[in-house]
Length: 601
Image (cartoon, rainbow, N blue to C red; front, side, top):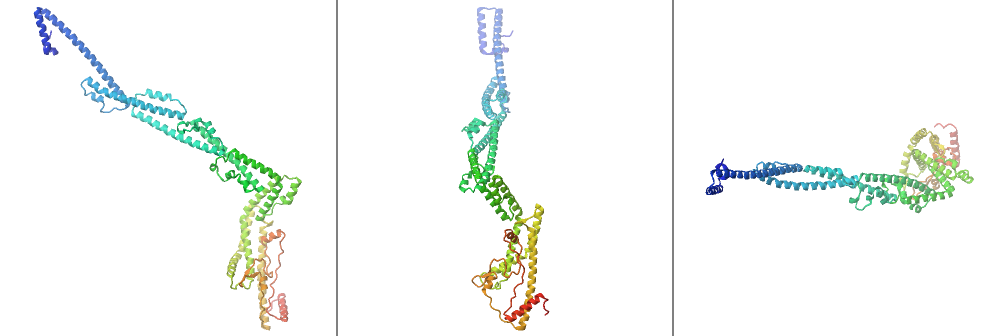
């Protein structure tokens, strides 16, 4: 048995224990205890000490176990928190505890870190919960559900082990996506509402009632807070816009029909500008495209009903003035035909129309419709004849210049210096150029006319006469005119030759002075300074040329004023200062030479 004061007793080597043991042995010696009793009591004392040590060891072991368990729990919680928060790094307390000696030091080093991570976890949970609430609210607004989503709530509560920044970033990204979608939807809803407001204004409809039928929140004042942005609302607004556009299109077509009737009736009834100005708002629709019609109330039922009532009023008035309207439109038809040189249809002439209306055999409306159809037909035909008619006008203008040139060439004083003489000279130059183009113009006009007739499979009539026939007659007449001019030139040369012979035989005498009356008869008048200005006369004095058969001639004949074409005649002989006897002999010799063969010189 070991002694109590044995060096192997560890703690018993201390002075206090040795002193106490010495005092106990001294007491036993004083008492007189035997060695056996001393050994027995020392053994009991040692047993009691061992029990105390054992109890203390057990208590220390239990304390160690509890500390170890606490440290392990803290380490486990630390590991869980760091894993959940995603904050594992090389400098974590778990790495530092391996260098610690005691459990208390380990526990002391881990506990504050765990507390910090707990606070961070709570803040992270709160942050994620706040983001989740926003996500649920916006998702509810988009999907039109007022309550939170059960799936999102359970997902967040069951997934507390993942509270990392990555998870937070995912929630934030999702929130930003939803916020962007909400902003886009809100902008789209506002655009739809503005379009509905504009359409309702144009159509004169109640805007509040229209949008309330889609969703009551659309009529609220706090747009950002109360406006519903769900798919149902967007689809409802789109449907409402399509419905309003269809209504606008239908009303525009209705208004156009009404306005067309108004214009027709206004023109027929010769309505004043004041009467038309009352409907200026609605008539402006004809000049506007569908998207440009934005004036409030312009397509309201009230405006349309007013225009319809005006149409009904004018229609009733038109029935009482139908005969007058028929005569007016017939006169307009004749005016169109006269401008286009087309013979009007005789079936609706003024006399026949009056007789038919008075007899009651024909409804005036049908007769008026027939005349309207004839007007449309004449306008279409005039449009197809426009190119040829323009060429006819240029040809007739050239013929007028030719007639003026002939009269100008007969003026003996045309070269005299004076005011206006140079103007006549320039006009004569232009007239000669125009006259030189007449044959080509006629041939081209014939070719154009024949091409038109082949294309239309109809004859091109000019005031009832075929234009090609008129042009052929003109070409023939022009050819005869040119032949007559050549014959007159030959006769004049013969007259000059005869006069020369007479002068050689009898001598020449001064010719009498021409009188001013001759100049006036020649188609010219004095302009005050001695020069002669041609007057617009078609036929030259003396009738040396036949009248050309132009469309105007045919037009005159069609109107009953056509004059018979004058026969060609030779120019009058102009003997120069010959006595009566010589004049008679000269006239006899000239006439004889014309009837017989020309004399040999």
